[in-house]
Length: 54
Image (cartoon, rainbow, N blue to C red; front, side):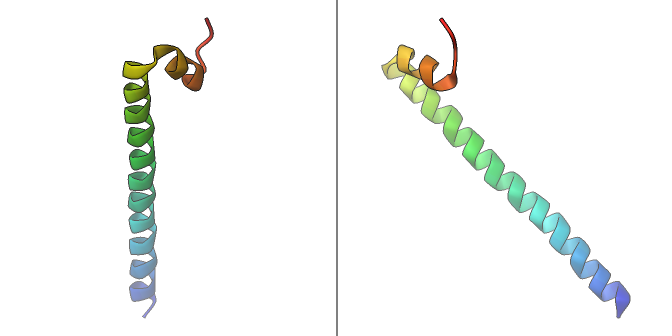
């Protein structure tokens, strides 16, 4: 009984880590692609959004 419960919690932990990594990567790639698109249209605005100083 204990090994089944322990295995289930290990599965939940690994699944949760993988799911959170997918969310992080999706948000990071979305931000990156958005800045690339803005940089093509208006480079000054993209530098201001990214926090670059002149």
